[in-house]
Each structure stands twice: as C-alpha cells, then as structure tokens.
Length: 327
Ligand code: NAD
Ligand code: LMR
Image 1 (cartoon, protein in one colour):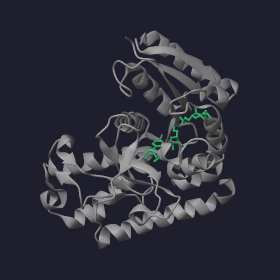
Image 2 (tube, rainbow, N blue to C red):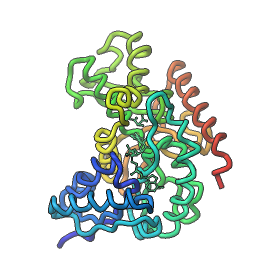
Image 3 (cartoon, rainbow, N blue to C red):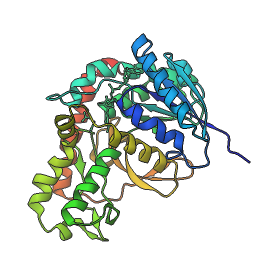
C-alpha cells in the first residue's frame, strides 16, 4: 500500500537554495524513493517573489515527479506550516562580500519569531524544524524560544555543509575518496569559529592526524579553510552557496530520518561539551527510531577545548545581540 504523503514546508522557496532544493525533495532524495510528499512553499507576500514561486512550481509540475502529490504556494506562514512534519526554514537574507553571517542577525532574527510561533500553532504534532537561514544557530534559538507545544529538541540548525566541506578537504589532502573520511564532526557555530574536530576524525580507519602527518596544516590551514569556505564561495561566485547548501540540507534531513546515522547537527546544547546552556551548537548525534541521541563521549584535548570555548563565546555574544527577540 502506498505511504501517506508527508507535508514538507519550505520557506524562501523561490530563492537560490530553494531552486536547488525543491527538485531533490520531490525526487525522493530526502525522505526516500517510496515516500510521497506535499510541498508547502512560503515566499514573502509581494508580487515579485510570489510570481517567481509560481514559476518554480511550474517547473516542478513539468518534472512530473511521481512522488510529488501536491503543492501549496503561499505568503502566509500559517498556511505553509499547517500540518507540516518538516519545516525547512531557508527564507532570509544571504550575506554579501565582506560581511559576516552575524551581520544578518538584526534583519533575519525577527523572521524567526513569527515563524516559530506559527509552527508551534499549526504544524503537525511530529513536526521537526531545520533552520538554514543565517545566522542559523541563533535563528533556530529564536524560533525554538517561541515553542510552547513542540519540544525544543525538534528544532535543529544546519552545520552539515561544514561537515561535508571538512570531509572533502581532508580527502583532498590525503588523496583519498570522501568515503574514507569518517568521524569528522562540527562543534559550535556555523561561522568561521566553528571547530571541525580533526582530532577524532579518521581516514581509512586510522587517525586523520596520523595519516595527514602535518599538525600545522591541520591547525593553521585546514580549520580556516573549512571555517571560511562560505566567504570563499561568495567571493568566487558573487553569491552564497546554493547547490551545496541544498545538498547538505537533504543530507541533514535524510540522516535525521535514518536510524543509526551519526552526523553533525546544531542542537540545544544543554551545556554539553562546555557550551553555554540554551545556545544551539553543532555536535555529533546518532539518529534513533524516535529522534536522536547526542554523542557526548568524545574526550577533548586542550586544543579542542580552546576552539570550543571560542565558538561558544561567539554564540553567547549572538544571543546577547538578540536578547530582545527572545521571549
Ligand atoms: P536568496 O536571497 O536567494 O533566497 C532567499 C529567499 O527567501 C528569497 O526568495 C526571499 O524572498 C525569501 N524570504 C525572505 N524573507 C522571507 C520570509 N520572511 N518568509 C519567506 N521567505 C522569505 O538566498 P539563499 O541563497 O537561498 O539563502 C537563504 C539563506 O540561507 C541565507 O540566509 C543564507 O545566508 C543561508 N545559507 C545558510 C547555509 C548554511 O549552511 N546554514 C548555507 C547557505 C546559505
Ligand atoms: C555558507 O556557509 O556557504 C553559507 O552560510 C553562506 C554564507 O554566508 O557563507
């Protein structure tokens, strides 16, 4: 018997990431090749974006995806999030050259108050939320703060792009396939302060540091390359990453719906790994049948602890900047 369709809400659906994301969701790449979906697409309620959204929907129609059961196009969050089991919060301003993601806080932060309230009011009881719009760790905290009905552990932000970047850079340096790079997890903020923990990463089952054999490269080149990759892409492309961000969001949701997967997700820290209580920080989780368990067992050396302290300070600073937006 065919599965019941899952409602997936996507905000900013006519934007760059939306254009790289929706076709993959509709193809089954995110929730599986036998899982029908209904796309509930939100754009700002003005003519230009609404018209562009119609165009995207026309192209989705033209793909004749067997799994795409229906589409709802709207400018109203309560319509977009109604009964949605996944709420993918992409819609918000991207940064331009020379900006940091935190510079977007004042503009983007307020979007997540209204959307957090709407999700809590109308989304499905099993709703899960993934925030991509930057600065995503703090935006998800703003949205989660509005939740009275949904548990806070359902609110996640995406650091999977950083994990994917980190694995790709290690694979390149070692001259191996990305499949050989495992146990690389991202701690902290989706920003240049993030800590891509090479100290526990493995290449071909061996410690990455031993295989690379160049601690100075790992500390002084690898970490900044991964941390500043978003800016490097903006510099090269003139626009922020879109296809890789959409790919990472597909990975984020697929792995959060595949029991046994171990991957990096930004979650309510609850004080784990030395992060402040109540900030959303990247760390490893293992997906379970009903949600995820946080992997808390990695012992951090002094270098790792110092990196985590820096990214934690930044998260605490961002929280201070938006304290007026936290209920
Ligand atoms: P974009 O400008 O191309 O598209 C954003 C879309 O969101 C626009 O169509 C806009 O009309 C819409 N939008 C804005 N406010 C909205 C609202 N309140 N409700 C609904 N829609 C709204 O930008 P993009 O390249 O798609 O990037 C979107 C966001 O994702 C940016 O904040 C960017 O910095 C972030 N991003 C995050 C990651 C990550 O790894 N977390 C990676 C890449 C980009
Ligand atoms: C990225 O990491 O590519 C995105 O967060 C976009 C950006 O502003 O860097």
